[in-house]
Amino acid sequence: MGTTVQSLRAEALPHQPLIVSTWPFGKAGNEKALETLNNKDSLLDAVEQGIRVVEADETNRSVGISGLPNAAGVVQQDACIMNGPDHNAGSVAAIEGILHPITAARRVMENTPHVMLVGDGARQFAIKEGLESMKVDSQKLHQEWHQKQNKPAPTERPKDNHDTVALLVLDTKGDIAGGCSTSGWGGKLPGRVGDSPIIGSGLYVDNEVGAAGATGLGENVMRYCASFMVVEYMRQGLHPEEACLKTIARISAIDPKSAEDLHLNFVALDKKGRFGAAGSGSGFQYSVTTPDSSKVLEGAAFTKKDVGPEGGNTK
Ligand code: SD4
Image (cartoon, rainbow, N blue to C red; front, side, top):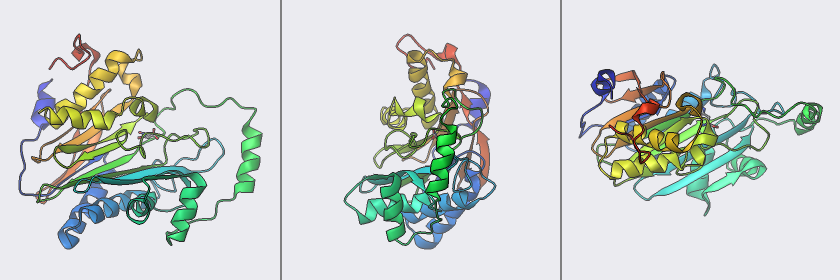
């Protein structure tokens, strides 16, 4: 691990809230989450309100209703939320025309006996719950979809047209919750679901250990239950940054693609208040907020030479 990475590593920050999220656009969400935590002392409100800020940003083409559409011209969003203290979770996938999928995910968790609702069922549920919705012109979409049938389906990973906000909150009691939300891969096949709403893939929270969230190419995250893996490495005592790196190393040892082409990025925090992030390539930035500061940091960059014989990270 290089010195830059080491110097960015945080040591224990006990007794104060900590919020960590993916990308610079997570910072505004972090700050809202901290404000919410201060005012309402509710982990779930902090996660939900923080993510809603990112979903509501109309300039963001990868989270929220202004995200990039799928191959049929419609924005289908994925989101989930997970609560550490009772290990409960809720998620929605491929939901259309709902302004705040994170709120829909929370309602699934709190108001149904289920964990996940998808597609039109998720949309109808959200509308019944009174969430803000937009009309989805399915007939127009249907026609557009048919017009596009002659075009090849997207098979290559699109360049820089997808991102996710994954936001993790640790409160002063040491309780943890997290959530994530995305419009996913622009131009994806209708009905494609990424890692973000899959508990253990795009997000995982274990109140005894810590939490992790992912952004990147969901297909390369969900095949490995990668956020769960990050948390399990933290359970073994690894620092959050090392846990992220070791997860990338393990996936990289199995997958023949170059590390750069895997497009894996993780953020993590642990119960002690330590945090870290890593990407399979360079340039992954994440946001960290405490009552003392709110900043964007550079995640550690994995390099393939770090893979040990067992597929773990050699550091
Ligand atoms: C997905 N992981 O749908 C999400 C998108 C993302 O950076 O995070 N892209 O595959």
